[in-house]
Every structure is written in C-alpha cells, then in structure tokens.
Image (cartoon, rainbow, N blue to C red):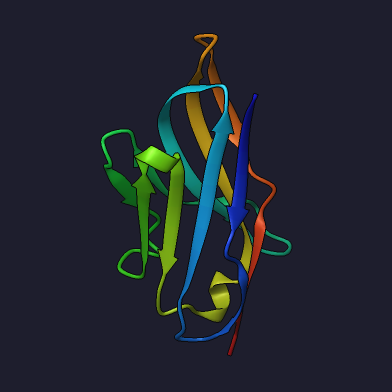
Amino acid sequence: QVQLVESGGGLVQAGESLRLSCAASGTISSIVTMSWYRQAPGKQRELVGTITSTDRTTYADSVKGRFTISRDNAKNTMYLQMNSLEPKDTAVYYCNAVVHTTQRVLATSWGQGTQVTVSS
C-alpha cells in the first residue's frame, strides 16, 4: 500500500503565501509522477500541476507564475509553494502519486486533502 499525507494548509489573506507538503510512504519502488489537484466547493476537482521523476513540471494556466512544485526525492516528499494567493485559490488541495510498487504494480494513490482558504 502507498500512503500520501498532505500538510501545510490554512487560512491566509490575499497576496500571502503558503507551502503545502505531501509525504509518500509505503511499498514504493519508484515514483513516476506526483501531482497536486484542488477542488473548490461546488466545482470539479482540477489539476494544479505535476512533477515527473525527472523533475519536469507542468502547471494549470490559472497558477502559472504563482505556484511552484518541487520534490525531495530522498524524502519522497513533494511541495507546492503558493505565492500571491487569491480568493479563487480557495479549495481542498489533494496530492496524487503514480508509483511502481515493490510488487511491480503501477498504482495511483490520493492523499486525504488539506484545506486552503484565502480571504480577500
């Protein structure tokens, strides 16, 4: 099994910054990709950005230039640095990982989510 635990959410004012973390653990042989998603009330879950095993990153247009994804491979941890936060960034943020397990299975896992609230 693969477990993902997010942390770092909270309440901030518009223009401020937050950094989210996602720690992966369990029967992981290698991580293929890690991604951040978010879901605002009444809306569908959307992809925020992805980082690959070679540290290539892609972002949704809505966060480009403001959000940065990084990884600490030694800790199997991914980060989401969010700057210049706006009220429209308010959502539950979820971590996703696609991994090769030690049983040589390709698996997808989700974290439990962390709330980010940006006040105007």
